[in-house]
Image 1 (cartoon, rainbow, N blue to C red):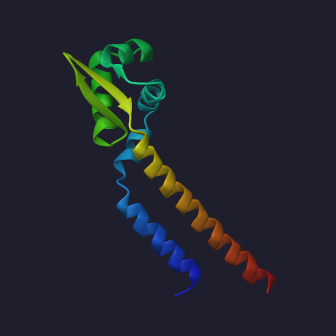
Image 2 (image 1 turned 60 degrees about the vertical axis):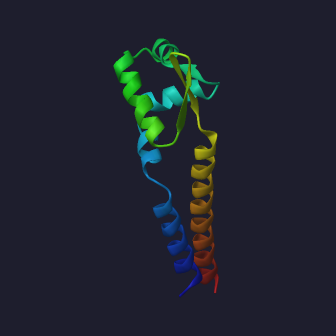
Image 3 (image 1 turned 90 degrees about the vertical axis):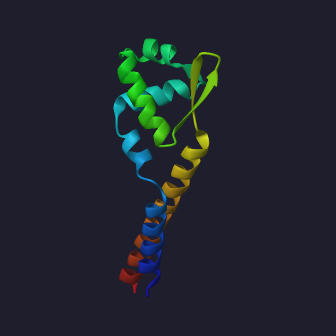
Amino acid sequence: MTRSSSLYINSCMLLEELDDRAFKALGHRDRRAILRLLADGERPVGDVVDAVGLGQPVVSQHLKVLRTSGLVTVRGDGNRRLYAVDFARFNEIRAFLDHFWITRLDALKLVAERKDD
């Protein structure tokens, strides 16, 4: 097995380990807007509704998707639910992307080196 095929297999295995729900959740612009808002600190649903200009049912559905994808956490505070970004999940995504691009660049380097020979 060549080094480039080994790198490709390792990156594919890492991709399989990383649940794709997070990537799907990030694909929607309203969810990204909610994440930008929550990146400043935890907020109740009402604050998110007011800030993003969507109806409460729509915001609640987006928060559910973000929560089940692991991008957002929720905690109870009396009768309120406070939502916040789960930065640990973003660290996992970043680690995957770092690994993905490093393996691609390593493979590109190998191809370039072969052409020089």
